[in-house]
View (cartoon, rainbow, N blue to C red):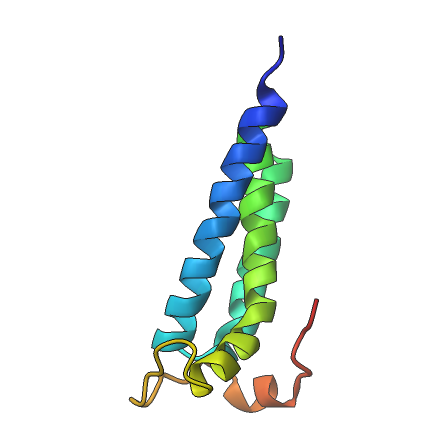
Length: 111
């Protein structure tokens, strides 16, 4: 009996569940303008998964990378939810990412 699919599904469920948590924390702490860096990190993790010889490692890295890409698209929506009062809103000034002027010109991604 092969339980790989079952355990991979459970692990992916936990990775996605943790994604909800870190999206809330990143938006609260840094703001949504950091989305290109998180998306880039997600693509790097997916590319790294190609070079991992272990099937488990490659599958888990792929799921983590996809969760990072998804989360980067959710940061703006999380900012809106925080402004509506659904989640804690951080009134303190948030650190600006490098190349903020270029990031503001980019269209925000939506899935």
